Structures are given as C-alpha cells and as structure tokens.
Image (cartoon, rainbow, N blue to C red; front, side, top):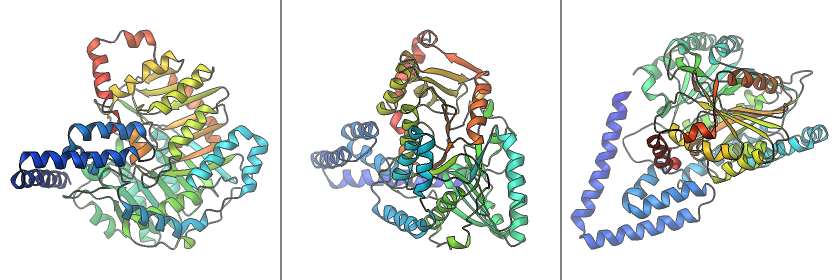
Length: 500
C-alpha cells in the first residue's frame, strides 16, 4: 500500500516536471510569462465568481497571482471538485435514482413547530438545504468513548438478519477491525448482503496488500472511494469522510469513530482518544440507507435495488425527532456548516462544542462572537495533544478573538478529542463527522444527525460536563503569556488555514 503512494507521488511529480520542461523548451521567457499571466487572470476571474467559501477562494487567488502555473496546477489537484461537471452530473443521477424513499412528512415538521417553534426552524433549514426529511418514531442513543461503543457495535452487527452496509473514512487492520471482520465473514457466509465502502486516502497505509482480496474471498462486496493513482485528478482532494453503518434498514450508526484501533483506545495515539457515536433506530435509518446507496453507485457504477433494502420501520413510543443529513463538495449547498451556525445563532442559553479542529472563516467566527456577546454560554473543547503539528497552531490562532468576545475555550488535557459534537439548550444536539474546518465544510463528503429531545441529546450534554473536568481552560491572560515564537507560528500558519 505504501509503495503505491510513493509510486503515485513520483509519477505525478514526473508529470509536473515534464510539463514545465516542455513549456521552457518550446517558448521563450516572454511567451511563458504572458501565458502564465493570462492563465492566472482567467482562474482568478473564475474563483471570484465561484459561490461560497470566500476566504477559501481568496487564499487560492493570492497563490495563483504569485505563482500562476504552480497555483493553477495545485488548485486543480487540491482546490475542490466544482470544476468537474462529469462528477456533478453522475452524483445528481445517483441521488435522483434513490430519492423516492425520502418522504418528507410536513405533519412531522408542524408537530415540532407546535412544541418548539424556534428549534423547528433548524429542521426546516436542513430539509430545504440538504433535502433530508425530519423523522419521529425514531430513537438515538449516545456512545462515548470508543471502547464503550465497541461492544454495542459488535452486538448490532451480530443481530443483522438481512444486510450490513458500512461506509468509513478509515478501515485499518488491527484488533478492532478483526472483531468486526469475524462477524462480517460469518454473516456473508450465512447469505447476508455485506458491503463496505472505505476511502483510499484514509485507509491506504493501514491495510496489508491482500486486504481487499481477502474481503472479496469472504463474500464481502467492496468499494474503494476515489482511489489514489499516478495521474492528475480534479477529484483527488475530495474524500469520503463519512462514517455510516446501516443494518437491516432498522439501525444506523454515525459519529466520529473510524474502524481503527486508536478510536477504541486499543492503541495509544496522541494520548487518550476521546470520540463519540450515535446509534439510531427507526424511520430515520431511511436517510442513511439512501446515503449509502448513492455513494455505492457513485463509487462502483453499480445500481442498487434500494426498495429491496428499505424497511418502513418505526419505533413505538419513541420521543423526540431525528434528522440525518449529508454534505457534498459536488454542489453549492453547505448544510453542515449551516446547521452549526443556526444552532449557535438560535441558542437561548448555551452551546457546547467538541471539535478536533477550530479552523473557521469570518462568518463562523462572527456568529460565535455575537452569540457570546449576547450572553449565550459558548464553550468549545479542542485537543491538548494534537494529531497534526501544523494544524493545531491554526486552531489556537482563533482562540484570542473568540475569548475576547466571551467564548470559553477548553483543551482536553488527557489527549486528543475527535468528537464532532454540538449540544444546545438541553434540547438539541448534532453528532456526526463534520469538523469545524475548511476541509469538512468545503472538500469532503460528510454526514451527521440533528436531534431534538432524544436520549442522545441528554447523554451527550452530561458527557460534555464529564469531559470538561479533564480540560484546561485557556484564558486571554494564558494565551497572551505564550512565548512570542509560538504566537508567531500561529499567525504564520494561519495564512495557510484554507489549505488545511
């Protein structure tokens, strides 16, 4: 696997060198300079007219104006997928093929409006922005940390009778995966439809060479999202960051936990790993089935008979409401960022946030500051031990301005907190895969679940209070006492924030 990365990187580098050599052999300097400027101006015009993520686009414009050829090449490789109409068309076709199972019952929205009109507008927003329905007759349970989720996950897999669909950013061989694989093999042998999608970039260094071959031999159907190859790809930087399990159309799972040993603290990476997940049962599972089938066809080209997997399953006497959602870089909508901002701006008392990264643009920063200045108790928990040395200083760069506005910042001292969690006013929570950074908001396929008055809301709230006991609060005075060198590193790396 690692050899494939090295070979692919070498061949891409070779193509870049060949391109430059070709240009410099054919044209004199003046011609090259003119072509560079023309290409740079065209790309800048395109970016200025591109919708969404203005700060992100501005960073690319600066790079392109300074280094036109390099900047354009880098943007085509890493700057987004909105230059790929073929992919957009393919995704729309997949979505339309399965959309009929997403039945939006307006009576459910109206019921929530009667209960809590202010929070019901969040659900209305998600339905319009993401096209996913709001459900009742569903339950949502909260699990954290990963080692508490592990046995329940295995139990849910063991109870499967018809099918198991898994979609994860990272599938890494180890103790956690072995316990899952044992069940998947057994279920496939028993005749269940077992399928797995994993992201190539997320998983490539975590599997032995014959990993896929062994899965297929066991009767498990495999799809590898966006395989890393030795040639340029406009889609290279767009990854499937989702974590989804769908079992029998009755149970769905999402959250921050990947299928790797560090997520269940079987091995130590960056101290103690704190993560979370939610297990959803009932009608809301339909949306996760839709997400998986769309991605399966998009990745493999194979159509899915979704009606054969759909179950109109309802949980009797379930309280509360659940609304799954997904986010894609292949359209101009941004429901993941939008629902975060709506929760913050609509809070009446508090918003508690867990995120491994805090790399935000001006709009998100202003929403947080305005809420804090309005007297809302805003608390954000980030890691104390980072997973990436160059990313954490950018997270810390955002502390000061937020703290000066009244936002309280906490770092989780035992290690790395990977949860992507919002809890608001003892009523609302969202749990999923969406980090507070440009990659999640602009480049990755993501998903989550918005919940109102479910068991997961209250368990997540209580757990955040437990997490806070293991946190160090970062104050304005503490931040200002940082050595000048550390603060300079934060400022310099923040210039690269949109690329992280």
